[in-house]
Image (tube, rainbow, N blue to C red; front, side):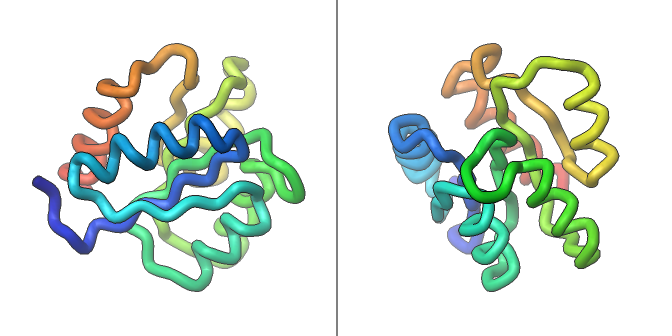
Length: 125
């Protein structure tokens, strides 16, 4: 069971996917918050101390790319793992250059694998 102070922000505009991811991570003992657009995600990251942000790239108001750029501009060191449906290598390279710690295509990762990925990332940082 993870440390209870581990807080994860899921920035995902699909309410169904956000709920499934959040519920699954809560079952593992993580404290989970959600944001449904890029502006909300950025404001929550600025205001709160998250152990990890799980960020979608295609969201309303501010894209995940814009959120990453804004975090980089602020020199914010909150770790971000990108979970997206964009599978282009150029997108992967761009988000990694903007400071993301990992890039995962949603359709390629099962929910149990997502939990394992999050756990391993948190344990190694």
